[in-house]
Length: 197
View 1 (tube, one colour):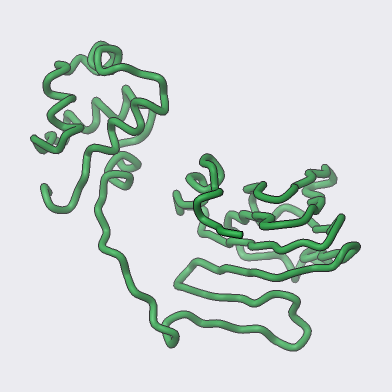
View 2 (tube, rainbow, N blue to C red):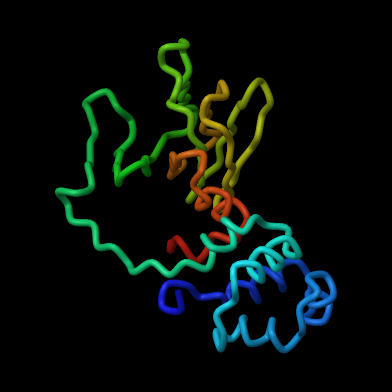
């Protein structure tokens, strides 16, 4: 378990919630020293301790394990990433397992309507749209959301939605399975470091 998990994530989660070591200690009923040792990876917590800390941090034990799990980088070779673009498709599409990445540039006034009929609906997943440059409006279930450069939106892809480019725009869209925590993380953090001009 020591090599597979990095529980220093507890410190990150604690700070995101505005908690000091003392506050987390009081919430969890675990000594400050024990929490500090766990955060510094000096000790491996027991399952009951993980469960208690997860409750105190308002995440499930499964989520805490997921955050703490160390996965080695996986190099994806060209034959493993399905890259496709059919003549009538306005996106370059990359598939890596369940992850679908769409990217494209659009002129002002371009309209995308993925849901012209029920048979065209996406498979149930989370959709994350990020505008690299430009400006666009997304209509999701008859409500408009305007995104400028370096702004994104996360929503269920089975909702009726359409895109309208208000100016020339470069866009990336990620389709992620519903149980994939990456989507939530992407939506909750500053994304400037992911993209360079």
